Image (cartoon, rainbow, N blue to C red; front, side):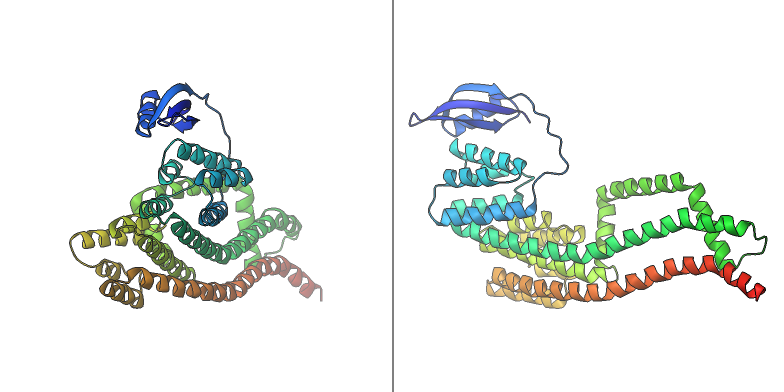
Amino acid sequence: MPVFEYKGKSLSGKQVQGELKAKNRAELERLLRGNKILVTSLTKKPTQIRIRIGSGIKKIDISRFTRQFATMISAGLPMVQCLEILGAQMESAEFRRIIVSVKEAVQSGSTLSEALGRHKKAFDDLYVNMVEAGEVGGALDTILIRLAQYREKSDKLIRKVKGALVYPIVVMIVATGVTFAMLRFIVPVFAKMFSGMGAELPAPTAAVLNISNFLRDNTLLILFIVVVAIIGFRIFLRNPNGRLAFDNFKLNMPLLGSLIRKSAISRFTRTLSTLLSSGVAILDALNITAKTSGNMVLQNAIKKSMISIAEGETITKPLKDVGVFPPMVTQMISVGEKTGGLDDMLSKIADFYDDEVDAAVAALTSIIEPVIIVVMGAVIGGILIAMYLPMFDIVGKIS
């Protein structure tokens, strides 16, 4: 979408200027007229080519921005001044550009939620809707503080889960690389030595040599198959049915499944609690929670809950039927619905499952570490023993 630079006058005669995205000039003029700005100059900015990997915006940057913004608004600083200060101190050039754009949109008469909503890669639906609820209810400072707390807890949960998964993944990659290097480069040295012996090799040695020869002769084919498998997997995940099957598999994985399930429940309850306590309508809150759930199984259950509520029923039954939530969770949600304190009950569930994730991470780490060490030792030790078996036979014959 092109970016236009504009200059104009407000109803009070004040000169205003800034940059906004729009499909064309006519759309931008309509937008500015809607904000009661008389346009005097409108030019299209030349397209700039930006090459970067990812969005260039870290989750922790958004969390820090939200916390600092909430503190400044609570202290009574004008919104535009807050955005100007925060934009100047951001390390990420892309995030700094977005904050400047938000500030200019607010200066032009847009609401904060409208300005944030134009930058989806930084501010998701949950963020924008909570800010809108705060603006409508006249409690923007309170909502921003609540949003900052939500993001900080959410980021902490994500770091815990990633921390539990990174270690075994890194060790497996290293172990695979070491095994491949041994089979591809070290074992062939032994193979040359054994070829001049003329004796029959032990079965383990022959098996390792066959694997080594296969890797040496088909390295490019194996790499091609790996690349095709990765691309095929990504295409598979883009299909809704494929994504649903994979998300269901993740929830039922041995060892990791329990951790992923608990983190998903914590994220769902924390998100829904934060939205409801901020004054967002139940159906809108569920719709946003479904989009940000990160799991298709959970997303489908939430959408069924929306249909259930629209038909005058409760939220509990669809959540119970999906099989993701333990009975304790659905019972507490049911009690929260009946007592009118659903947001408080969801917050308590989220706090409980945050502690459960901590315990699951500790347990998983204590189990995975020795398992990986044993597997690595067995594979690498097995290769070395297989290579030395012929030597033991030679020494025995000489004796």
